[in-house]
Length: 268
Ligand code: GLU
Picture 1 (cartoon, protein in one colour):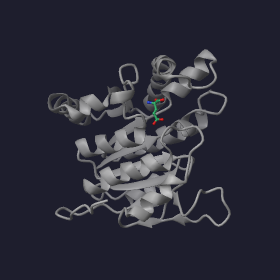
Picture 2 (cartoon, rainbow, N blue to C red):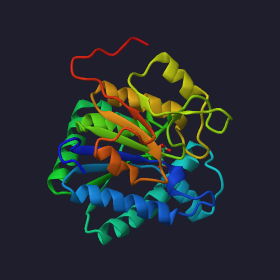
Picture 3 (cartoon, protein in one colour):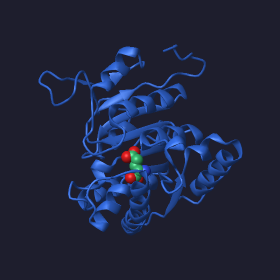
């Protein structure tokens, strides 16, 4: 891993990578991810893991099918968040990496004093060489104030901490010219600028179990790249691709070029 290319990295992982369709945790998938993040952390970088999967893990634990309304979703998240954290804690500890649970809401990140508090906590955790594990605080995040998808949350957190790179692990390994299951769909490996055409491509795509789909990933890419942060969407099945990205490769999944300081964002 190149030492100076990316120093602070946010990795976001979605429910479909973490929880099997039957509601049980995807043990092999989570183990692979934890191993990669631990290796990156031990190479001296700051890493934040933004994780979904609380609702899915809660539904699995209680044996409840379907996400239901917001009230049900909040209760399932409260159950599943503990299930997830217990598993992360156990696995990260095997690699000698300490973790911290950080639950945030949109209100926290849009209110000056709370945003500053969140930043203070995250930077102090970096000083202590801890990996913050972030999720939306679903218990208090009701419809009007919710990010709703962790892609946006991850981009906002990346911006807050001045990250250099945001990697989104997804069940779809990048942005495609048309819905990826359709014949003739081709992956777009490199996006220099998020044009209205790129945004339109995301509208036709979907992800089976996750919340955001490709639209929220493009929204995240806009937030990140406009803040000068590079972003990549890669397959949740191959987290080791993150090593290649850290070595400067832009050939995995879809890579979004960050805007340079002083470059203006185009009007939509
Ligand atoms: N906060 C939700 C959860 O942990 C996930 C939102 C999303 O899928 O992006 O289940």
